[in-house]
Length: 444
Image 1 (cartoon, rainbow, N blue to C red):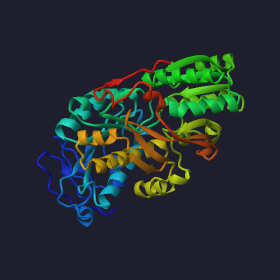
Image 2: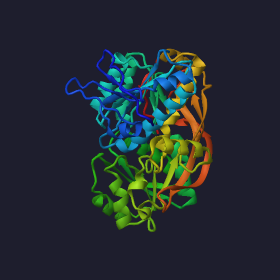
Image 3: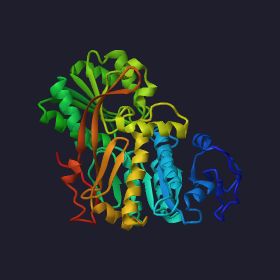
Image 4: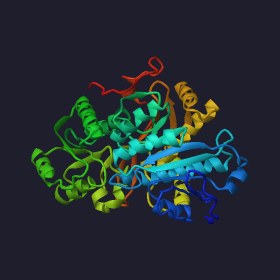
């Protein structure tokens, strides 16, 4: 990408580059930097803006039009940034593609990025900044359920719209919240049926992250294990900073399950897979997960450590529908490694929102919400067809059972077409109750 000359800073003190980069005013020691897009993604932190160059906007016929501001609050730094780094680039790539193609309803998109640093106090701060100061039309953000639940009431207070591009435990019923990731009924039902009935994993031992995602997901695991004629021997929870799983592995060895179920989360928890293979080994005990691979864990483990882990996912790089997206992302980012589901979530979320804006012919949150409620928002994406369920503002999608291989990637076992968010549909009907704005813990 050619480097563009520095433009005159706007009145808010933000330093703007026409080469897609806007640097925030740090109030002290302000320093001009002229970075390529790739270097900027590696170097920048805090809050900044990506704006397409004047040349791109001129060629697209949208120069001079008022931009649609999109907020993106993700963990560029911090212990959970493994889930965010490719997602933020995929979202930015999709913004650039839309701008090059003539913008959205005749206007350019301007992307405001905020580094939440794996710290919920920054999710709170930046959600407020995005809504009040920057006046974004939508926020795409949040990795953990706790980060989402910090931002969701703020977005509601200021009558905005939050796209949560992450798998989670389900149950959020809020017209100002859209879920584009998997929920348990979509992911766990086919995964557990396969492991119990086809692989003989009748006795299960559950390990989960010690926050609401892990607690609720473990209950869904127990439900589906029992419904398929299996038995859950034990459930253990681990804080996100735990790296020593030796005591838990000793208890697993004593219990002698057929399969260990992992809903572990984050960089620290990757240690479990390494320690499990070094002691028990998947040749002796099966291992399945709801979260393995979404943070590119397979790239941090050895081929032997990742080989054989079974996962249910809505995206892998080798899907026939993924080829164009994967090639484009690698060219855009310069990163030739595996992209993965959380990378694709960035493109998925932005594309679904953009289609809703087109159908509403407006980027105003309330107009977009009305378009979503009609249930006609469909996008053919890299993982297949995505359809927003107007009853819940969750997404119907294809689910793929895959297994880790020795190439630090995944092989497809089988796919399940267009699985609805059936769990959240049990408790949420935004058509009947449009003012609902809570997360239900579905009774199991």
